[in-house]
Image (cartoon, rainbow, N blue to C red; front, side, top):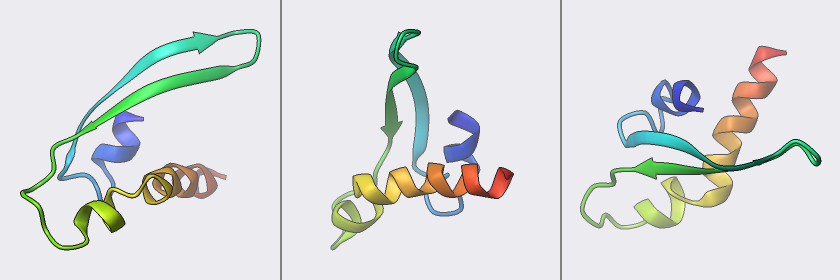
Length: 67
């Protein structure tokens, strides 16, 4: 995850770290925490760039690109 987000043109400059919070072998579920350093409040920044769907789609696009 760290490589995906640190190399992202959209989020790379804001990305700081990724950490696994919990992992389940039974269900193949991983919970992780992403840490970003965001600039002072900019109109629309948190609503658009830091939108959970946008962040999730960065990872999704990386997975598609590898296939």
